[in-house]
Image 1: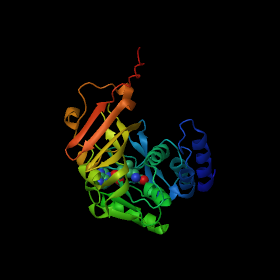
Image 2 (image 1 turned 180 degrees about the vertical axis):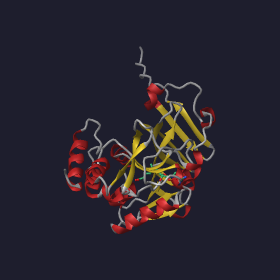
Image 3 (image 1 turned 90 degrees about the vertical axis):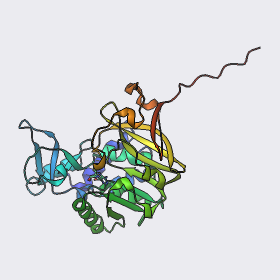
Image 4 (image 1 turned 45 degrees about the vertical axis):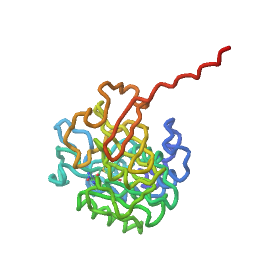
Length: 302
Ligand SMILES: C[S@@+](CC[C@H](N)C(=O)[O-])C[C@H]1O[C@@H](n2cnc3c(N)ncnc32)[C@H](O)[C@@H]1O
């Protein structure tokens, strides 16, 4: 069995050679992944995200099955569940219920960071601190004191803060409803949400500097989320497009379903062509439109 460092190196090799190009040719992203110890951020007790034959999510306990636990932490495509039913279920046995916090799977984390593309010194806002792992990766790139991360659950926020502090990572952890962003830290060069939105909160758009980048999972009529990459255009507005399909936990305040027509989606959608949609959002709401087909310029006649 490999140790954590060797597992990280092995994952990095696999990610680098994947046709999906998870590091996107960005050396800093590989460096961040190889440097930040994911196992430091994963709680000792985690639930496996698929139910067993008994209908329950199995518990993986670091102290009881350390090798299994470490292997799970370094699976590339498996999120591990760290909270069920907003903490009503304690992590001491197999359980079922709604997933409310996790350490997101490695490929999804990297894909979002690749599209976010923070630069050193950028002011970054993360919504959904969870374990603190993504905040640590962000801080590795953007630098000490640049990252603010907001978590709605006080216990989860406190644990993430302790983990970041223990590694000497200077990131600000705030316990609050991330739908409000962090007005006192604005404007931000980069905003990333690791909880999914049905509608993009206006506060994020106000707090994104013009030219800044916002990445968020956005609910779609297809029943899964689209990761959208928005660019701030000023005056609390942004425009962008989907870059991936994904499934994320919903932001607490946006759990109740709403008709997609109310959320700016067109009546007729073709989710086979999700890449062709454009997302526009401002202080009045969002609108998702199919980008006009590109028409070839007509050749001059005569
Ligand atoms: C998928 S987890 C985040 C994973 C995390 N980024 C990591 O690196 O481990 C989503 C988190 O978003 C949090 N969350 C949900 N709604 C929120 C809100 N309105 N504001 C802030 N955090 C929220 C949840 O409590 C949960 O911890």
